[in-house]
Image (cartoon, rainbow, N blue to C red):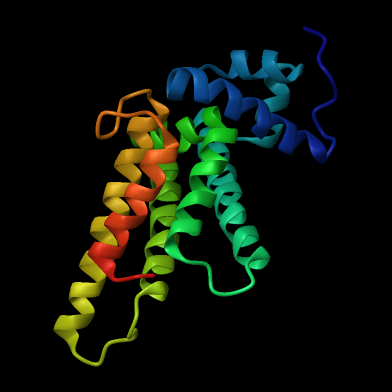
Length: 198
């Protein structure tokens, strides 16, 4: 494979984009050769930008997590008032539907990926856990027990949301349905019941 030059700065983004497609389909077992073929570069060119497959996998996961976070941030910027939980959930799931393969990488394949990718996933969960806490009425709490209850409720909600997202991207029915039109409002109601967030 002749390949293209490795050193152009935009190559890194192109490599991550190609790696995301390949990893989303094959998971962490995908090879650097497959990724090089996907982006039209020589395998050596990939190593110019990334020390190895684990680093590239983790970079792909980070990029996908940032894209989901940006989708939520954009929905917040577009809102005329504070974004209610339903619309926040809807923004994430709309992104999931429009970027199914990338969502699969974040929600499903990351759990069996390298430690840096699992850390990126945990940072993603923490980001949304704090978003949930920020929406909860009466925050911050003065009483340490009430504060702990809030934190546990936010953690429980995020565990549920991540599990549902993983099931959905893998084609498993959630509550007997694959229909986002039913899943999203149900998830928002569960969130309100757990956290009191509007």
